[in-house]
Image 1: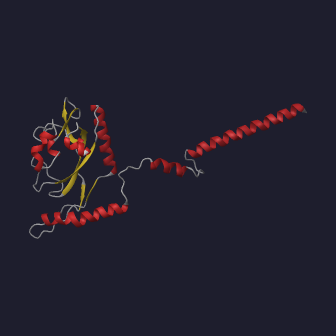
Image 2: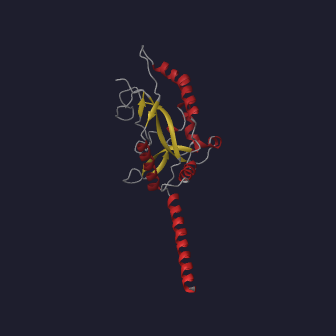
Image 3: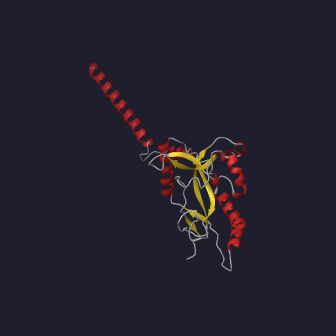
Length: 237
């Protein structure tokens, strides 16, 4: 009888231990996302909260900023570019697909790896397509003749200057790649002086950014800047 009691107690203990372990395993599976766990949404919320960029703006701020552009900047552009009774509609926005943007970022990361050099960031330049049938420097027809746009220029960090001590973003300047061999994407990252300051400051460029090149010196260099975006309103046909 005593042996039977011991065997029964041992069996009950083993069953209890087995149930405890299976419950623990079940909880682990639920935390991973298997249905039935109320904590999954909270875990996912905590994860995505850690990913939110500091530069995110509110909806109201976005609307106010667009309204400010529409009321103060766009009319000036449209007035300046409306000629001989032809009413010009200024560009409202430029579009790029998310997949294309991801591809561009992946391309830049590969350029970094190939050169073992850091691309520090991106500059978004306000720009405009030429009114001519082609670009002055290359035999290519502009996609949207005369229309405002922007282009993206990857940047490299340079030594601190008097200006960049006040405006830290000026340490990050656009560059091209001066190839060293058969692969045009491997070479020296060369800052481009023509993109640093506006034309009024052209005489300051060489003094402010030592070692920078201008467009005549970089014709054989490789550009990794992005444009060819979709614009709205589209050009008139």
